[in-house]
Image (tube, rainbow, N blue to C red; front, top):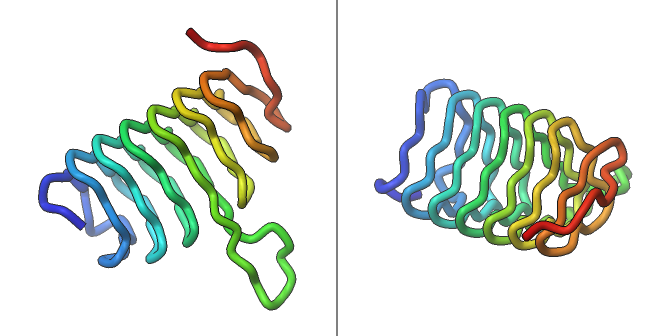
Length: 138
């Protein structure tokens, strides 16, 4: 962890001391970040977000409140962590769920309440349950 990031109300969050947290991040209350997590620079993680082992969030990302990442596709023992990647500049809206093993593309947007079951390409807007392509961005 770094001292150049702001963790609001750390007493209400569970943030692993060995998770990688970049510079100038803002982490709000009631956030859970596990050991094998990497968060880039200048990210904003809103309240009540759950980030388990195996998730990488690159620089300049926004994760809305109540977003839940998962890390095991099968739910059978032995559990196998599937790596999830949120590329630079991506934004994930409130109350979204992200299935283990997906990639959310650079500068893409996931709309509020979406359930992401497959990879999202760069610079696209996806919304819904399951999330589906709406339009290209920019």
